[in-house]
Image (cartoon, rainbow, N blue to C red; front, side, top):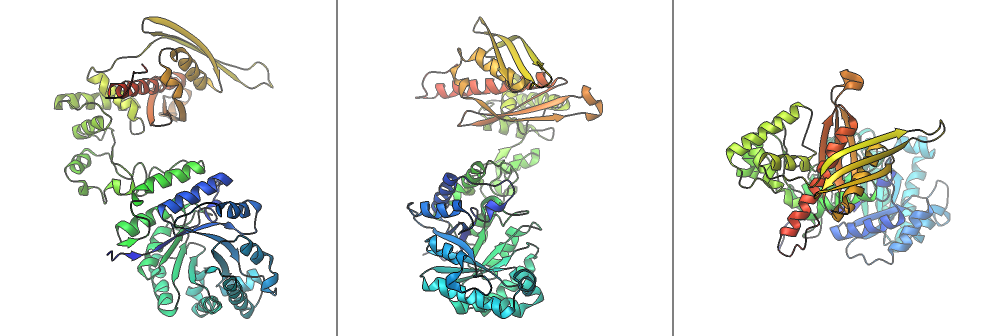
Length: 537
């Protein structure tokens, strides 16, 4: 039998996380996320603020029809208003109308907040907490009491903060949640205060921290170390101001570093997938440097590091990347050695039989291009094509005969238009195409696809997902070199390509050509595998 300590995970992405700048969930997205969190093994899913808006109430209605296997859905609300009968409080009526098994109720644990925000007495505040707990328990709910501003209050008036908890516990609260609402408490303070509370109360203790000084995760882990049995936070740290404690590194650290159990068996390996899923739902760019799950979390750039990690991963990796669904990445730059170059080439599917001399030749070509402004850390596809060219394994799928791009304005009140004409030679034939676009690069991309689709239908699946421009020598002003990095996807795979020129259109063309050729090479590889079917090229 496992001796791991169980720590409950309480997710508030759909409520607290949605308060973050630029974060919004569609009704369908909220339901999808709830089901994914349930699959992960989250214990509590806070679905929204009952009564605050129709969308949250609609979520509570719809989620009742979903077959969640593990998680309890929680409706969030506040204690009754001052000088109001608990039975008459409209917020509590909405909280009960949500029909969730569990409810979370926020109340004041700070004397200053009671005095200046609620503008009532301490006695009335404690009555508000106690009577609200009693009322909800009488209705058969599991009740969590969120002690707002608890840590700040405890530092200045511990007796008042503890009296707020006592009122909640006397009213029947099942769990008391200690909140670092302003996010300014330090880890050693969290540990000391949580340990004091755990020793003093007879109900489970949870911690709810914010990231205002960058310590939300550390504070949560210190809370657990001090005896808390539940951690509250959001996926990817979404939330107001600088965000809530990020549940992704919290879960990974609890499971892999602290000997705790907090997700369902086999689900820890889905952690990166969950992180990316939530970013996709909210249309956020994923943080490549995110601990555990970021694209760069297990990336190695220095040649010595790459060489060492191949011999023994523990030399430069604190865990096996696969434990959280991530993977090792070898980066290529002017800092690279021969080991990096070969390892990266093999990772991308080329260079398996390359010799040390080949590696030196590839490295020389790489450094020459980087001296001209090319970078390949975000352009794996361009690096692969470079290796193929050096190893004489590259074949062009088409040749450019010429292109022309026009940007114009038909009238002072009209929008600019862009039109591209392109002529290419494919399999001995000349193909010409004309296309318009939102801008010159979009027009050129559309014209190239139009010219090639008859020969290579697979490129119709490719679309650009990102287009980044960097001025390499700004002191040259309009004569400066431009670096263009393009990210492309076919719905299954994503890849990056790079181009550099004093002309932004030409730099974009280089990156576009690499993007298309990489896709066609990948199609050839798939077709060559047993059962791969005919090649698209």
